[in-house]
Length: 207
Ligand SMILES: C[S@@+](CC[C@H](N)C(=O)[O-])C[C@H]1O[C@@H](n2cnc3c(N)ncnc32)[C@H](O)[C@@H]1O
Image (cartoon, rainbow, N blue to C red; front, side, top):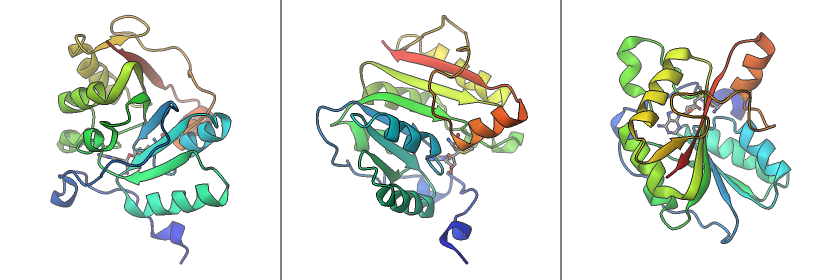
């Protein structure tokens, strides 16, 4: 069996083993803008951006540990030295990871494959995440969000709009961003593009 086949499709982020701070600050080169993808899976988007923007540092956070090791090996083999994946839970680990190295831009792309109502409590965009994003962003830093699930996008927008003391919607209150602001595509984004599915995008700036 290849290492790819051993990577789990999902883990339950509410399991006790994931409900604690586990990550510690990563050593990152000073003075370079930092972009972080939250829940990056195979990091297709992050690796493409890292390759296109070598003067920036890219970190992908992923809760499936095997995936983190697999992608890090792949990035090293490709000679990408400005991209790193970290095994972390975005709902616990942001302050420990980035308090010393503020983030220029967060990407939250196609989170939450939890369609059943009983799984909605697993959703990652919640008031606590707002506070952690805000405290770890640099002044004027950005959060970019995308989802092809209308309810997920609308619920996430409501959480951001509720904190208009922390974030400003770059398109205007309660507005989606038209088109993708970045050339790179995550695996889910590419699948939506191929199938012609709509994608709802938002961009928020730290106040
Ligand atoms: C639906 S996939 C989307 C992957 C990728 N962003 C894309 O657009 O193709 C969501 C990813 O987030 C990860 N994830 C879910 N909850 C997480 C959490 N609390 N912290 C970090 N990663 C998480 C999952 O393991 C999965 O890889």
